[in-house]
Image (cartoon, rainbow, N blue to C red; front, side, top):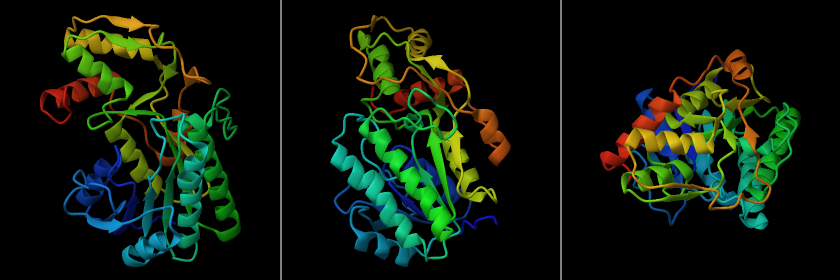
Length: 307
């Protein structure tokens, strides 16, 4: 079956990916409900979306949102700890695992056509064998637990859920303290940039490509119960990416590689199985790292992100 996307609910609507996903859904003509924490500013959410108060920690809040939106497709992006791997384990469990379970319970008898549950590439840990998960921090562990519940709901309740694991997503609008925005800001301001030795190999994937991958995961038939990587299939070291930003901006500051120690349990190699993803959903990333960095640097110049 192919899920219809005329009524869509997006949780985590105010994050990095959420507003761009909502904007793209609106372009397709979908009616979009944006789940926003009751006390959270929602200025980044496109105005055409219908905002709903939604706290995934509260069963009644989820039930009310599902009842009002009556979604055919749900994108579950709400999470804590995305850029904080040292997050308190209880918070990760309550929001990332418990919130996903509460949402799946609410949707299990709703007639939803597809739930796209967003995980993380860090669930793989150092092994990165297909479905061979080995998370090394609490955020990744909570996401791996949500994946296990998703498989159980698919098997026991026939919930049409697809788990998506984005890799190193970047682009305009990314939180300022993360790697690429921090490096661009330092480069444009002529500042030195303190970083780890930068040997970590990562699959950097542009945010607009990730949005298209999420849409594909919502629409492609007969992939329920599956986990999908969203990445380019190419590895670049963190050091290489920072050096490329320096070259593209003509930065005068120094790259202080090794000034910051690696985080405990740092995974040194994470690359998507892009060929498998292409076979399953017909999607491949289109934006090269060079082009994606150019667009992100340009966004700083245009004020989309403050340098």
